[in-house]
Length: 325
Ligand SMILES: [Zn+2]
Image 1 (cartoon, rainbow, N blue to C red):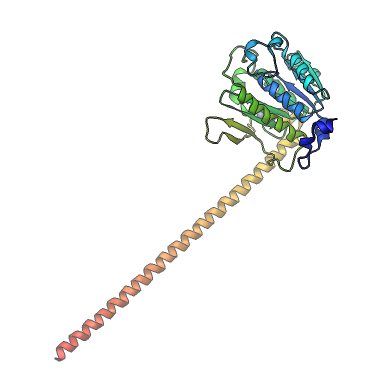
Image 2 (image 1 turned 120 degrees about the horizontal axis):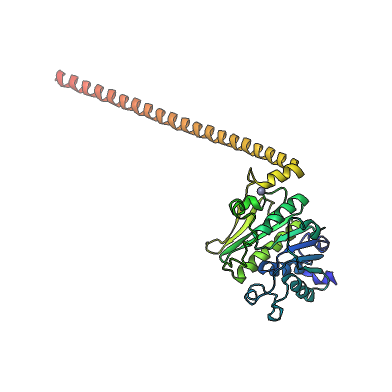
């Protein structure tokens, strides 16, 4: 049954549906991103999905949170989304959980998952997910949207973290649990959620089933800005030296930081070598140019002096001839 259901994607070279079908995913947030991400996940055919959200569906959600219907207004978002998804794909285990993610409960409520997907609008929750994913060594698929664009990235122990991406925002609002679109509604539009959610699902596939056609793994964000002529671009991110992830990694995986330092040193060394080569080459070219110019000037001078000597001899000869007359 599932072989037929996912037939078209299994025709992609090196596709291994088992790797996807065995995967357990946690989706945090059942809003605009959460709706479209979950729709993508059931299309991929992941093994199980746990959706977390403690919010209720409201009328103004319906134009962006595409799966919800008018009759769902007032229901919990996570539970409703789970039910609606089950109607579309009954072979996947889907559970909706009406619970708030908190630092002291996250370990108990999110257990045994392969990937966590960040579809939240609370900076506070994003911060908790960040810490939990580093500690538990679970890849975090980050997604964020505005009305003109958005971004997504795969964050692991080996990459910079959420705090490396938003250091200022988190310092200011770290403990502000109310900084949310509930209190501060931002402009938002459905097509941005659809595009970014699609790219987030693509990142999930990359984590579960890397394919030879994938771009080489690199720490960065795939960004969309519809105001640009080329709206999609990749932005590299760097680990901030004083970020919390550095303190955490020192405790849970110091080897990663050591390796990063070694790689950085190697890159610096290579860059220095390249710089030296460029300087040497430029000096060599300068020397060549100067010696060619000197040679040219010397040859011109000698040519001039030859000519002037020749002219003098001719004049003298002419004088002699005149005198003899
Ligand atoms: Zn960090």
